[in-house]
Length: 185
Image 1 (tube, rainbow, N blue to C red):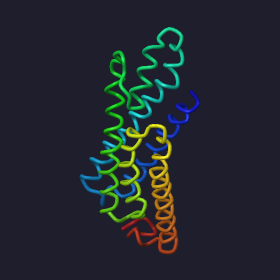
Image 2: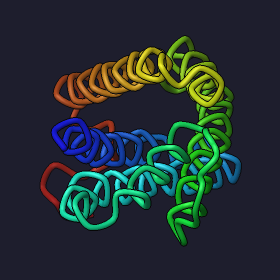
Image 3: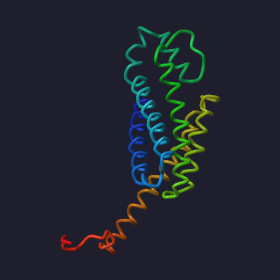
Image 4: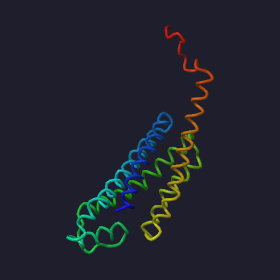
């Protein structure tokens, strides 16, 4: 329950972060960036939804639906389920697909835009692509999240520095916005 509650927080913060990164360079990132952002955001929304169910719904049915709970855990860990788990099967598959494909597309667009740290963009591509490894060796799934986490921190830091330097330039030269200091043209 605690782990999935923290995943809820992580997904919410990641959605806010990638939205800020996208909006900062919306004019340079192009249609590939928009597509990547939308698919990546859908992946994080899927993580948010499945984590919500895992943190708040599944614990309440452990006593009455043990087989269903075991099957959901099995599918989440890339193992076969013995019974049907309904829409959770599709939600888990969609989440993984959107996270990986959206992350790679968004990272490629970030790298091409060359506005924020390119190393962080490249690491984001590698990190989201490495999530495939979580399906192969699920006991190490947390390790596969490290590159993506570092990439998001790097992009956030790069965004923060870019905004600070823009603000400093504006403070040094307020007329750079082509505004009349009196407000009348």
